[in-house]
Image 1 (cartoon, rainbow, N blue to C red):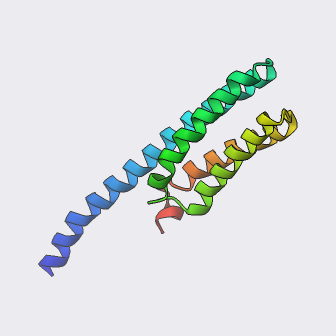
Image 2 (image 1 turned 90 degrees about the vertical axis):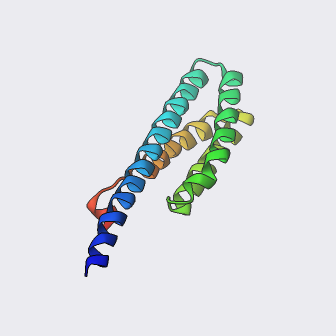
Length: 127
C-alpha cells in the first residue's frame, strides 16, 4: 500500500508538469504562428506579396522543425492539418490566387486554434 501511495505522489506531479509544460508550449507556438499569418494577410492586402511569400516560407521552415516535437503529444491529424494549410497557402501566393491564399489562411488560423485547444489541460482532454 505504501508503494502505491509513494508512486502516486511521485508520478502525479511529473504528469501534471509535463501536461502544463506541453500545453503552454503549444499555446505559445500557436499564438505566435497565428500572429505571423495575420501579418502575411496584411502584407497581401497591401500588395506586398513578395514579402508575404518570404514570411510564409520562413513559417513553413519553422513549422517543419517543430512538427516532430508536437507529434509527441498532439494528435497527428491536427499537425498534418496545419502542414496542409501552410502548403496550400503557399500555392495560393505562388500562383497569385488571393482567394486560395485567404481561404487557406482562414483554415490555418482555425487549425492553429484547434491545435492549442485540444492540448489544453481540461477535464475533457484529461479524461
